[in-house]
Length: 213
Image 1: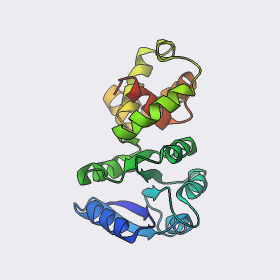
Image 2: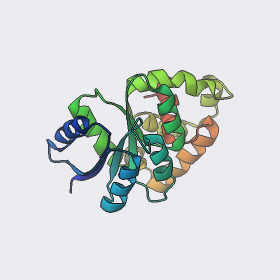
Image 3: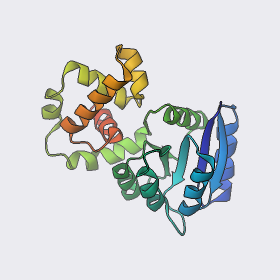
Image 4: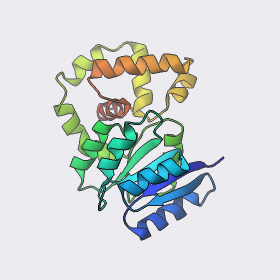
């Protein structure tokens, strides 16, 4: 079955272009399109997608406001923000809300499709260009330096953290390390506490900035 996607962007040409790119290989199906946050939430309710791609700047109900509602749901689909270089504040807020991915609108078509497939599998997707811009802000908000944080981690926790940095899902990390998915989830929870990160994407961003990917 193809991965089911809802696109939310106020520009019809952008939505049409994204749909063409995503559906070209047959692995992804765009099941709904929305011009604002309210329409996106309605599409999610109607179509139950696997992944939602959301522009943060839209008229009416904006992307962040809609993501705040969506990410609070226990059964929320994976959500990724579509952004541009000049929207760091929006991306930082989306990170705090718990989105699983950050994609630039000028991403290569193949990279965009891979990102959607990774999101559907439970992974995190972080464009390296966004990572480079967000890391100083994220690191400035942590109370302890890199060396101190890494020294607290066990060898196994470091292995799991490398998997997070690569954007892998818990299942993929478990397969590589020979661990049950539930065990990986426990390691991830411990990592978040030790790193002072709010979610796995924040942990992945820190790890990427520390050269662990």
